Length: 208
Image (cartoon, rainbow, N blue to C red; front, side, top):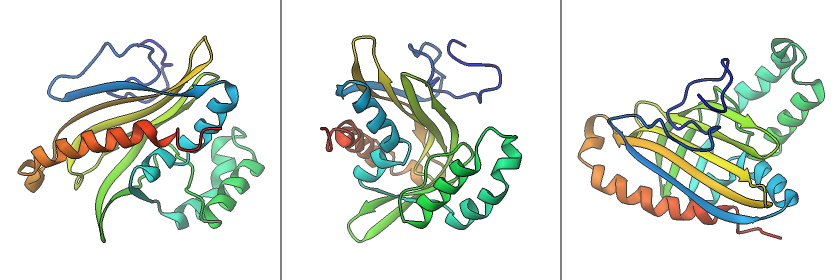
């Protein structure tokens, strides 16, 4: 698989591959790229925002992560990572959580993503499958868990091209959720269209 090392998790959307060639059967596929801006400064800013869930939050979602688990886990993170993550990195992450800043996306994280519908919040249980950061590409992939309106996977990919343009690329595979969600599939598909439009603008709202 182009762009992946052997120790990376398998995903259906192949977010590190420049071209998405291997698309799974039995799902609806979606891929689109949205221009964000130009330059390394724009890429760095948008990368930090993307990896703190800002695309989802600015598009009408609340991100509910188990903050206590993050803080408790921080105490053991350095030893588990065998030096890959410094004490300063762990402390900075914990401080961000304590300050109310959206927690940074982490592989294995299991947030409940809540859609804001007026006074209501519709939960979308999810699990982060992969987080990736390179010089010119970063982002994350999450998959749905039981209770989510759809079954599938979604990737948010920020790329910086050779001519210094920055794009947000969305890739997803989806099909009807389980149980009662099958009855509401037409409404869920309409909601997907609406929220993808919001995603496309989310990182441009604070362009410098």
